[in-house]
Image 1 (cartoon, rainbow, N blue to C red):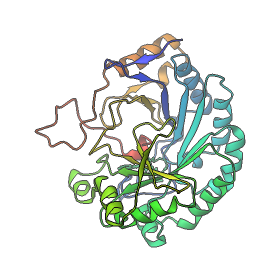
Image 2 (image 1 turned 180 degrees about the vertical axis):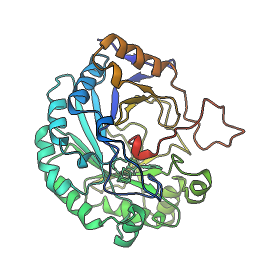
Image 3 (image 1 turned 90 degrees about the vertical axis):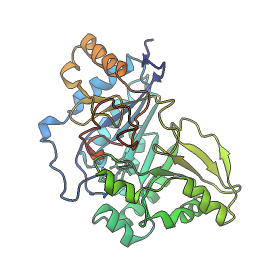
Image 4 (image 1 turned 60 degrees about the vertical axis):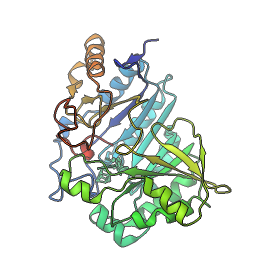
Length: 332
Ligand code: SAM
Ligand code: SF4
């Protein structure tokens, strides 16, 4: 079996595949205020292209696939995509990151088709704040989606919470208390300056050290735990609670050192690093495995050791320009 390594000997076995850039929300940290111009449909990978792409990656040692977007559940053939990826014997794990709005309708079919794990984005418990952060979303729909998913026996359900100063950073303890009776892993994520002006970002960024500060101030005891396959997050549990919480700190902490991720955008470009602009069109090579392999290795050879995100211009060892894409065009 072949494996994919970058020049820092990081083995890559995890593919994050954006299956659409479209979305039914417009979250403030992800999309610009004026909305997005979505790719024309023929610019987005077809179902057959996606499946062949995954098969090519499997021949290069990929065993885990995450479907993301935009919002993956707005794609009509999403269940079929999951089913066909599940049929590839070498794939050990299929997960999805979703805003959860359509989950109450789709959770059952997705689980049946072979989806193993779900990450559901929910940044607040307050309907008004949800509406504000998502620019119009109805929190009830996500709550119904989470409840539906909880009945389906997914191997793991995580809640993704991006902390934003002045909007939801007062809800950290509510999220941790939620894990008392809910078997979910709440993942606090640092707000990343992707597609946002540095200025807007820096005034809203909250370091995840804040989570520990709030726990300590409230006398909440928490212990480090290990969760299988948890990438860059550090995980903790309050003794006696069913669920757990994790911290993903791309800005203030460890994020890149064991990076095993490759990203494919909905329009068929490989991004070896979330932040940097370098990307190569793989769509053109899907039917030619040798060319495909070369393109993937080229992307890996140029993968930086660290994203160097949010360093000041003078400190930043300039690799090249940060990505032109908004997060919804990468997938997170
Ligand atoms: N639409 C799906 C969703 O919201 O879960 C999947 C795509 S979304 C781009 C994937 C993840 O990226 C979400 O959990 C979202 O909260 C996160 N995200 C988007 N923009 C971000 C930013 N600027 N900083 C940190 N996380 C971000
Ligand atoms: Fe859509 Fe997800 Fe981005 Fe929100 S975070 S706008 S739900 S892609």
